[in-house]
Length: 140
Image (cartoon, rainbow, N blue to C red; front, side, top):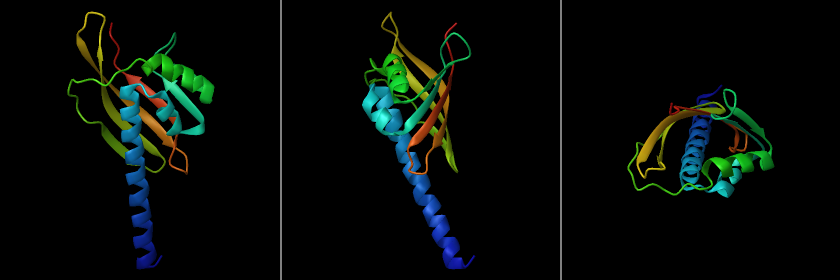
């Protein structure tokens, strides 16, 4: 490969990773704000959500309707928190991202709780998320 072709490939990869980073940031903001429609716009037409809750070691949701219902149950009532939280830490590579995050929420006693977790995201060639596989700490 010529030096010019190598330079173009690196620039293309950089642009693709920057775009994926922006998608991850937008997805996180929509999650925190309970914006289910934005979450779905950032996902492919055939999304998969592997949730961290459920009767087994999590629950698997497939397709827009199933994922919409799951997201609505999980975050539909979320309101952006005034509490500061750390920025997500992202590791982007090829068609995947590993994202460490913190979700702040107010518990039934009015106390703000911070729950750390990690998502494994898979991307379609168009840059939308095809799968969100979530892992988080749980309360005992």
